[in-house]
Amino acid sequence: MKTVKIIAYGTLMTGEGNHRFCQNAVRIEPCTVTGTLYDMKCGYPVFTPTGNQIVHAELIEIPEKDWKAIDGLEGYPHYYNRMLITATLPNGSTEEGWIYFMKEIPARARIIARVIESGNWKKR
Image 1 (cartoon, one colour):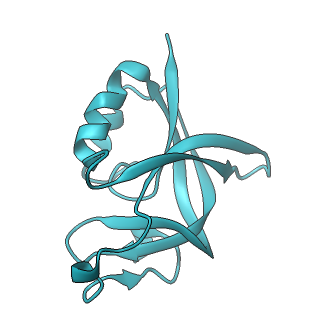
Image 2: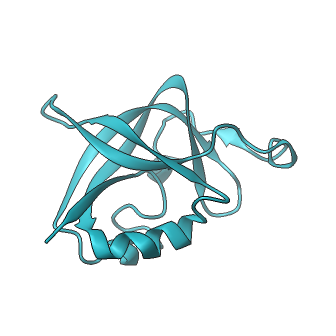
Image 3: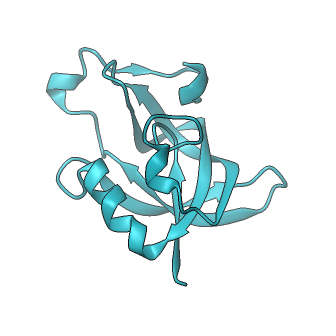
């Protein structure tokens, strides 16, 4: 079975509302990435790859066949984009995974967007 590694920092994480999209995951591990995490005040966060914040996430390995549904949820490529990024695992090793991101917060959303200082969606 072909698999894909995604890095989830919000509603796809374990215990969150959209984790059902990862129900066939073959592996889930905590990890961190560097960037900036924003609370959009509408039930989901946004990650931007700029900044030096440590963002807490999960490396989730899913069957490749499940990736299309997650792309749909994330509005890829019209709302979110995705890129390969290096994640650091608790043991200090690194792995690459696909992360959904925005290059910048849209101007109309900047009014409500707030940086999640902890870098942790679950502890916002």
